[in-house]
Length: 446
Image (tube, rainbow, N blue to C red):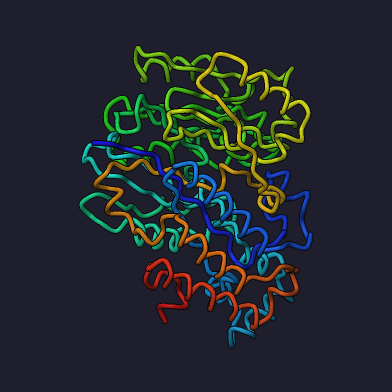
């Protein structure tokens, strides 16, 4: 049976704004308080989705979260009408208020960890929403994320959905941003690499000192158990604590993998030699390509600033393996020079396609942050909610929807108005009808 790897990108929400909420994410902090353009951000994201669909990729859409999150604000003691809650929170606790307005669900690499049926003991595709406990503005996402994933992958015969892990730092889980999968063909039994930043129950072992390690070994092991991964399917590796302290908040900022390739920076892992040995042993005898980018060619700051590794590494239907990169990689002299050398060398990577996702980049996420990878065989693909799969009709419909509902200029003060809340809810209500999601949002369940 044929299997493909689909990409499900997060649709940028109406409240896309620059609040600088993510401590440890240099791009997010450096653009704090800038005026955002939600319409442009959403249209840029849709353009990227359509371009990959036009390349022959199976491309899906994941709906954004409801924001402002009035329900979380009510849990924190803000009372009265929705308008009262927004005004009180924005005046009395502006940082909390902005956290409850974040459009961070656009970065669906953090939505969940997904294991294909070829790797699992029950031959189902398993989904575990990330709990994202390290950041409050993201920790309020998992329940609705789970609702949306269940609406997209609803057939119990093919899909298994788990509740997110306990909401505690010991089980901090940031989803697919710290997970990648290697295989010969997508439908074959594969190797799943889980990358963690620290051991939660042993503080004597190496850990970052400046910025938080958002993923724990214990969380990785728990997800592997929940997904019923078969013997030899899981490899665990620790991210280099020093690079976390330099702004590499997820593994997908410093490494990316696909099929028989791991493309990574020299400083990515705490023990690179062991990581390579573990992957090679699990992968088996067939050739595996470790493409290591040396620091003397691309410095760590250039890698982070350009998001060289927060690129998508994909196989086109032609079989060609290509990189989907942000324009920043083309504009950075050291990074662009390296990529030109890479294409001239003897590796499976044959081309680089550059995309403008500046609105996302300025808020701390590149192309890889925007997508969740889901391997599906023919029967599973047929069971996916087809209203979420990109094609000419959906592209046109969603562009019309964005142009109808989104603002092209948004400041922090705009977020506190009842008018904006109503606009957002109206937009999302219409979106759930377009995508046939049902009542996935709290405001629809009252």
